[in-house]
Image (tube, rainbow, N blue to C red; front, side, top):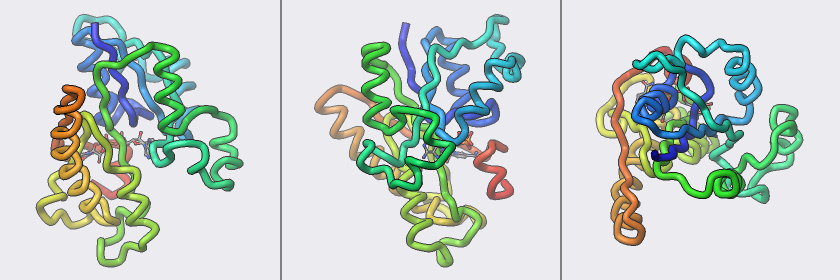
Length: 212
Ligand code: NAD
């Protein structure tokens, strides 16, 4: 069977969870990357069976998550992490959560993966119109929201969607452009396919933040 890593699962409401379930139903082994500040609540909810109902697959079995990795996709390695984040008590309890460290941990634990899903986004100023977004908020949106392999994009990259602010429309446009370029590069070099799905509106945690 295939092994999939899904980055951006912290509850059972979002696209990441739904994709994990579909892949599990198709026989894949599931690893997830969970945003560090959300890790404790996600893991304890899993353990206490809070997600058991939504873990149910069509055949009646429950989706198993082989391992949950703490992840903050904004930082490539420990050197990139500012002191205030390192010492923040929501981060201090977890280890090896930068992108490079997660790659190494997964390599050590499982060797290789077959499928990578990027289902995360974070626009701190998403509720502000683009024209009122600060440089800091804009760069934060771009940094957390444009990834690769199989990712989730949104139509706001090409059409005006009022309320989808904070540079998130720009982040999705960047993501779509990066998807094309990476599909070309990774496809040629390593025969890795890179795609993005433009998903419809879903009442996830992220979407509720902007009142969708
Ligand atoms: P969600 O809240 O379920 O998923 C977003 C996840 O990103 C959360 O689990 C959050 O903890 C995580 N995250 C935020 N910053 C992170 C970081 N720095 N490092 C690691 N994880 C981080 O919401 P969702 O709507 O399912 O979002 C998944 C993807 O789908 C996003 O790319 C989103 O833009 C996209 N999308 C959503 C909709 C929609 O209407 N909900 C529509 C189209 C596309």
